[in-house]
Image 1: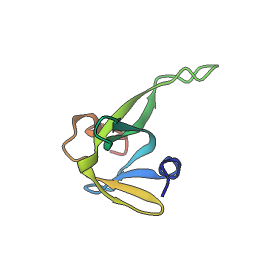
Image 2 (image 1 turned 135 degrees about the horizontal axis):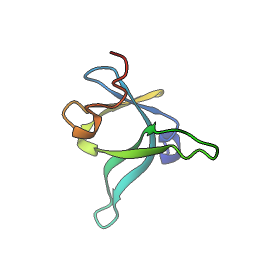
Image 3 (image 1 turned 90 degrees about the vertical axis):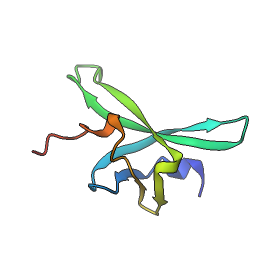
Length: 92
C-alpha cells in the first residue's frame, strides 16, 4: 500500500466506532526513518462563509495507536486522546 492510498481511507475509533475523519498527512521522523503518527483532519467549525472560511483543527494519532489498516478504513484507539473526546459529539 502506498502513502497516497492511505489518504483515501477514513480513520475510525475502535472503542466507539466513531469516524474521526480522513488522513491529512503523516508525522514522520526522517532521521530514524519511522512513522510517528497520522494527522487526521478535524471537523470544520464555524460558518463556512462565501469562500469556505470554516476552520478545522488537525489531530495527531500516535502510530502505536493505529490498530489495523484495512482496505476501507484505518482503525485506531483514540479513546483517551484529549483532542478526540468531543469530536462529532452532536449525536446526543
